Image (cartoon, rainbow, N blue to C red):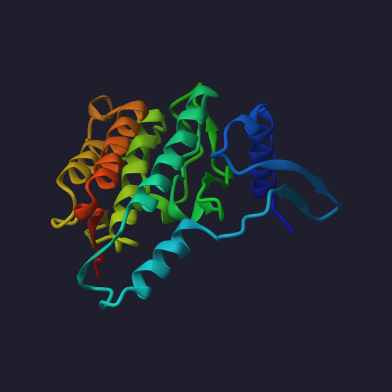
Length: 244
């Protein structure tokens, strides 16, 4: 049974999903069919996901490697870059609809047998009409949040780019363990990773929101990285590093 705050969040999520009237035109948003409720519970109805979430997929890749999970190894990467592009396509669509997801993290990305990745879970999503919100994201999600979101409760399209950069880090690390010191979380790109991808992640984490690349710029650069992998067969993988 949900408490009052959970009911408010549930209603907010349903309202946002309903506002995406042409959601079927975006193949990178987890499809919402509707909801129902009784005296105690509310239920959302979504399409069936047949491949689980990205978090579990990365974990499986990490531990299915022939190498121990704390060493550097090569892995096929075009599929993972494609998943990242799918997520970003979903973010771009939400931007057009003036929606900020706020939690673009691996566990909220669902995978399908056709290779598609879809952004899900709009429980903490908000309208971008007001960038400063009194309703913060819970502290357990702070490792993914931009500095202005944690300190000033500012959520914007540029803070969404920061979070997407963290998702990229988790992808290239096959699951990132966030180093922490004095309450602060550190984002450290793998030294052995593709330099262009490292630079892209670091640009997403600029302390100045205005200095971060736009969604379209990140999308274009990721497409270039994927194309490089596809046309250079001898370098058809990015060095991915798991970190402890």
